[in-house]
Amino acid sequence: MKDPKGFVAEALVGLGRDVPGRTIVAASGGIDSTVAALLAQEALGERSRALFVDTGLLRAGEVDRVRALAAGCGLRLEVVPAATRFLGALEGVSDPEEKRRRIGGAFIRLFEEEAGRFGADRLVQGTIAPDWIESGGQLRDTIKTHHNVGGVPKDSRLRIVEPLRDLYKDEVRALAAYLGIPEPGRQPFPGPGLAVRVVGEVTAARVATAQRANAIVEEEVDRGIAAGAIRRPWQYFAVLLPVRSVGVLGDNRVHGEVVSVRVVDSIDAMTATSVVLPPELARTISERITRELAGTVTRVLYDLTDKPPATIEWE
Image (cartoon, rainbow, N blue to C red; front, side, top):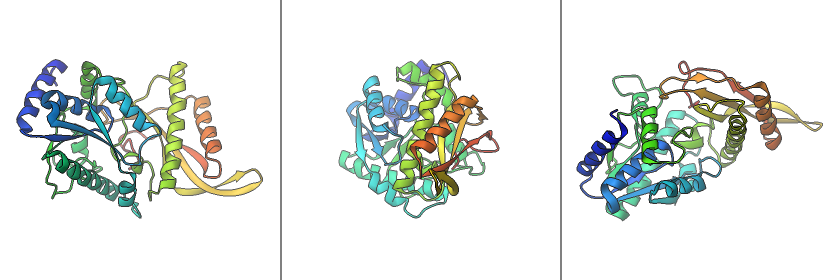
């Protein structure tokens, strides 16, 4: 990438060329899509409409956080509630590739409906290089289908516009800082949301469990960062596994679910190194998850796998 100023100038020209009419923008609240949405708004003005979809698969407090993020950088943003639609699309599905395809399809159909109301025929996305590379680009094997690439139905009537397509995460973060977006270094969150942190079947109850476990991991790691016990990792989260484990609650036997905690460092998301938390911090996370989800989660594991051989997210 050129310097951020030069890239922005070229991107604004490109968006003006690629969007002759109106467009909607898929704004997830992450850094990639927020940068893309701000560029589209600057280039197209009222011809651009940014949409944040509440899929029911988000982190705790995410809708309020995204609203505040948009307000902080001057982005006009509309929230579209769609939890019923997305959970319905995932009913009975356990295969991770099928999850991503269904989520991608649900997003596109919703965007097609909203585009029809707005009179738009384009969809601006914050797709970056790792998204399409892992989805099978450059003659590579498909590592995992990203919902915004391989999950897009082939019969979609929307033309996709991707102003960040050739950038890597560190380059997008530099752009975010240049554009004045709050929290340019905030950890990434997968586009399919907690659907890929609920390994196996996705239900409202399992999503709620993963949501609480994720919140605990983020809260405790953030406390450790603030106290100087650990420097900020690239990503830190919890995964709900498709296995059950025997535990003890009071004097009773319980058969609950299992959570794995994952913390990694990376520069561009193409590779990552596992991070070992201080023992006291790891223990606090485990104790909070099993206490606050007592009777639901009976065991907490810790993932020490680098990328490769693993991916950052489990699915």
